[in-house]
Image 1 (cartoon, helix red, strand yellow):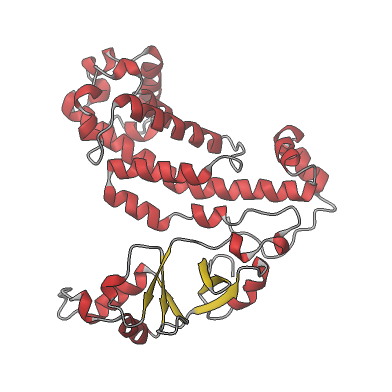
Image 2: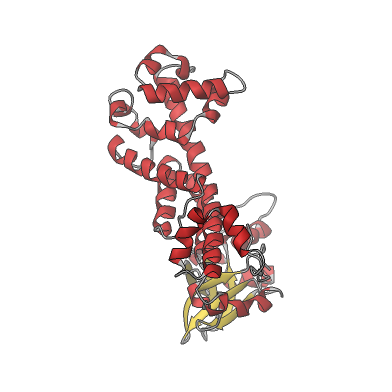
Length: 345
């Protein structure tokens, strides 16, 4: 759901839109907006974009968790654990009902189809205290190989994430919640389950970018670029080796005078390494290649600098050209980076 660059005229449609959303649903946004109707619409759209950005993380977490739980149940009970008498006898009436409804909804009576029909509520409820001796006293390490955690502590984490997921599923407001922390909580939970999956999800997550798009009461023209910049960056000099490039989202390259020459991402480093490989052998001494070699080889010239006090809207004209990154400066100090969002420009 990309943000439109053309202002929307609510004059003729305002009342009709509110009526279709319902006054009751729109009321919290109107109150949060100080009864400024157009600002309330901006908050509503912002909330929708935030919800969409979280769906990807929640999707991967739910699928990863339920598959890991199914693997454990398959070993602990039987490959058809959902039909095993010992498993079914240990379920509460609520969980049994949810399981049977899932079995009825499944297209085929096999494990994969049944797993896909069961809700996140079903899986998260299996961490309640009554299931501690039933399965988790001896299986938490199998579930979470990257952390030592009790069933009780994990139950709270999963319950909070499930409640958050349900708010999104029911189109409820989330924009006033501590979403940065929720983002971290979901990524941490994924990391407990699988380091590789967590890193993959973090790389492709758009939550932080979306959080920086929060509207202001006076419209986007009053939002400063400093409010939207990403602070996950590191700085290297051109004469340093590429081994100095860290795991930050952005690497800002400066010359000996401190002037900014380029912004790199992990994709640039990967592309350079591939270009230096021979006969499909990717064995390269990172300390024998300078940052300047990488920039020259890839012809990286993608950066523009701007003041932290500039209005965010003013950067659009630059992003419509070949500029890919803005480095935000405050009195000469680097504050962060704004990356070109290809869905918007």
